[in-house]
Image 1 (cartoon, rainbow, N blue to C red):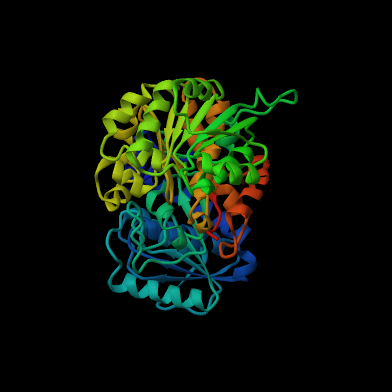
Image 2: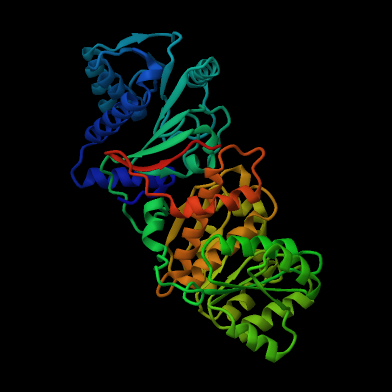
Amino acid sequence: MSVRVASASESVACERATIEKGTKSAELMRRAGKGAAGEILVRCAPVAGSSVAIFTGSGNNGGDGWIVAGELAKRGFAVRVVEVESSRTPEAKHARDNALRAGAAMRTDSVNDKLIVDALLGTGATGAAHGRNADAIAVIEQRRRGGATVVSLDLPSGLNATTGASVGAVVADLTFAFGTLKRGALISRANCGEIVVLDIGLDCEQDDLPLFVDAEWVSRHVPPIPADAHKGTRGRLAILGGGPGMAGATILAGRGALRSGIGLLTIVAASANATPIHSAIPAALFQEWPSTSDKLARLAQSADAIAIGPGLGRSPLTRDLVESVLLAWTGPVVIDADGLNVFAGDLETLASLLAGRPSVITPHPAEMGRLLGVPTEEVLENRFEIGLDVASKLHAAVLLKGTPTTVFSPTGERFVSATGTAALATGGSGDILTGVVSTLLAQMAGENCDVNAAACGAFIHGRAAELCGAVRGTTLDDILRAFPAAWNEPNRKLGDGIIGQLPSPA
């Protein structure tokens, strides 16, 4: 089952659609609470010992907590429920009564339990927590700093499900998301710890909600390399960039391509960069920036895809170069960095040059802002929507880098990749991603090859960083060395009732 990424209102709409089709709200609560309790027993029982403290609020998130309380009490746990606010909804009140009959005990404060379940505030909460809820969150944080494990239900209390605003929010070690992944959880991963998405039978398969990209999805869309492959069948890629003194960007992009299985690699750069590129990537061919129609034709004949931008530089000369290449080469293309910057505020010209071919642009938020002529903050505030119009106008896939990375197709589909760590927050990381995505584009064919290359590339790029573990001390060389493991990692089978999973951020 595919996991969808939802805002607060979209999550509510999924629940409403499910209820309208005949599933009662109380049943959704039961599924959520029972699923979370079962996973707590598997994952947290050794930590909890025989006791657990559960903090409940007044709404249905509190009701989920009461279901967990009842389920754990039935299994012999000493369950202490701190009812921060009295249950307000009929479903929550019913869950409360059942939990008390099952043996859960109410307390007005918490003791030093090693396991705490946060069921205070749900996806509908906006703004910083206040009053009793804020006081309870402070207690939970005190217990966490004292060594307790904190588990949040659906979303850490106080975290905005849509924007990721997290001032005063719970910091959890483990978050059980119900049915959908909340946008805010992907933006503020540090508050969520490990995220496990539980299937509660929500009707959230709408095509207009972003699809969460996972390992299983990637394995279905990346073409295998057959046993009888040769360098020609593994794809030919040309990377155009590397202005004077900027060979490093093309070298990193080339290494990303080679680590992703390209068969033939050509680096097209300023002539002064020939020696460092030959030294750093002996497997690559080198061409100078094309300056005549013959050289442009030779470049066009040497590739199944071209990547434009890494280390290119920004000047009228480089814009002329990019335009000349795009006019001479009409095949698949990936445009990044300075290849995009030279079209700042001129989306129309870029659209005409791309002319409907399979294309991917890979901006970070500042580059997207320059392309559209808007502040970076506006891009970040609308990261799940802002690429839709751009993809439509360019007839190209848009890969907007960030936490999380969002991918937009020309026909309106959206994808979200949340792999990666802060080890990727360093110069040159995006160049490696360009090499990965352009390799996939050179190897893929058919409808949606551009968006599939973008989404798969983003996932693998981030997964390689995750496999490196700790952030401090990890370099791009380490991440490149992790690519074989990321590409060839066996699909991790999810447990029963689990439809998605994200590790704790490193």
